[in-house]
Image (cartoon, rainbow, N blue to C red; front, side):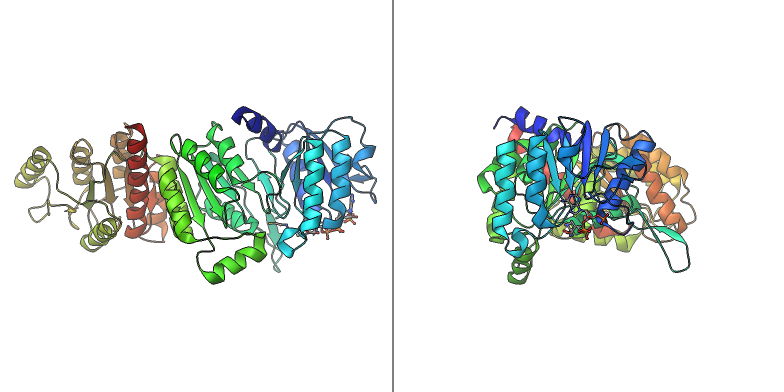
Length: 486
Ligand code: COA
């Protein structure tokens, strides 16, 4: 199928002109209530601009909207997106009615299909979808969250009330940003949204595709290749449906934007769990590794890597090579970064002669401590000041031998003031090479410094290892681009 056609077919999931929620409910603890309310809220604020219709045979109206007993009783001849939140057995009937109204897209939230062995029911849904030319996400999925268009089919309420009566954020919706999240597991997807929102990271779109009776991970990659708001794609999968299609698509996408994959079901126990979760055959891990290698996909080994690499690639340019310079005011953490870099195959070589000479002059003239170490890592010690870190960063940043910088500005030392963040950000604003920073700590100043760096688009990490593998992702992707553009 031509790319442009699939993109046009996926568009109604994110920008529907009309949405029908089948199973909309007045009962606040039901999935159909939360989903319908999301749309009502987003329509009230003007974010969601499409038409909205609740379907429920028992109600006259829901949240101020006239309710219809079935899709066939709707006062319009055509609809774009149908969100289905009724028990699995009723889904084929709903799909038949959606077909009669020329629906373009359906999100089937309901569980109870192939993941529990009910393949027949899933095949029936598929048959109706094909006949009606309806593109489908799910079943057994969460669907879509798009912070720009206001489409929000997540049945997880934004807030919950504690026993004390206090209302707290339970499932935050991240702000607009440049990370696309594509996930086979809905639960992990929601956890990802919570994590990203908590770290103040924005997303372009979120899609949970569950049992993928129709649209699969490759179709979605294809869509995000052309989505202007997406700069990096984070994908959680338990298996790939069509290996060849995936490899071809991922190759095309990786040439333009990075894909980071968290692939689970690596072990026998994990593979068994994947089978009963989304009916996925997890397959051999070696085969996946080989496919990822061919396509430039960056494989994250765990959740922390997944998000930390995604953050780095969404904020910084890829590195041209593997030679990394570490600038630190903390000896031990500097060694920790050096260790992790080398373990990941990055090089911690020296600087160019010219830069080294400049640093020596600074040391001789007392601009940096006599006892500072000028080999890589460059250790400015606890006597560091903002001026020192900024001047050294400037020299290293313009050194052609250096492909990327990891800056450890531990804020605890007396001479390092907040202004260094703004000044380092100014140097990095030319985006010649990637820079990532680390400031260790979980109290006010550390959180403040990290957030401030990130407002300037410099990814900041709470541990030396995180900073190192974030840089590894920037180098890995940079090398892949070099290899395909040669
Ligand atoms: N057309 C329109 N409305 C219908 C309907 C139909 N064919 N069948 C039922 N409804 C109405 C019901 O009357 C009910 O409304 P009410 O609250 O006013 O009584 C509402 O739709 C929901 O139906 P109900 O039978 O109460 O189901 P439920 O809300 O308990 O559960 C699901 C529905 C879809 C949430 C549930 O079956 C399910 O699959 N849960 C798991 C979802 C999941 O985890 N998905 C994967 C995420 S990763």
